[in-house]
Image 1 (cartoon, rainbow, N blue to C red):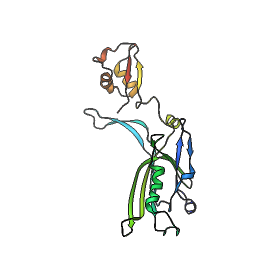
Image 2: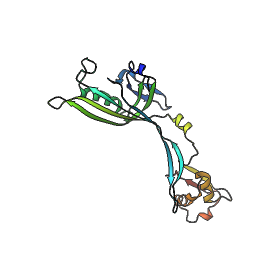
Image 3: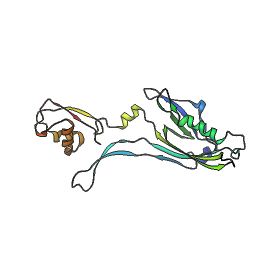
Image 4: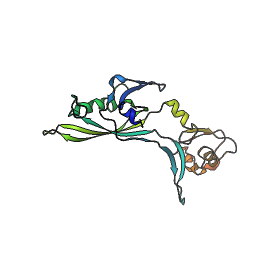
Length: 228
């Protein structure tokens, strides 16, 4: 969180980004959206994914690490069209919301997906893409035109392929494996080696159309799917 001194000077800005095939990010600061008032809340969440497998008679599910999930941030901003916030002539609320949507929500016809964005506030910096955007209109003209709105935004973090590869265990059970069977190996043994749980042998046998898991032939290649 930015300290109180920098918060009085630095306004939160949301800028569109482009990401090349190597994961390099280029920020377009020419079309940034700068908030009128800095958020009163800024929630930054971290989470870990697990695979869970329930077995008959088991009192608790067997939980296995599958990977680090993208970080998320959530905050709310105020959009005002009355001029009361900064004392200057400002675009109407509808125009300001459209300006924000052009950056965070608008579908990019070239990349066939919404923009990546950078959220910058003082020393805080976050790269990601919009997950949700909700608009609560709180003040209106007599004809129903909104004069003020509260916007709640949630972004899911962007992770380059290189960073994702470093964070993830590339031999983990959330990935597919193709294994050549060696002499003396059994399906339960291979399942334990890959999944750390031999009880998956029936599922692997079904995936590979094996009717008798006790007689797998050396030299045959078996597909071990990701855990679900």
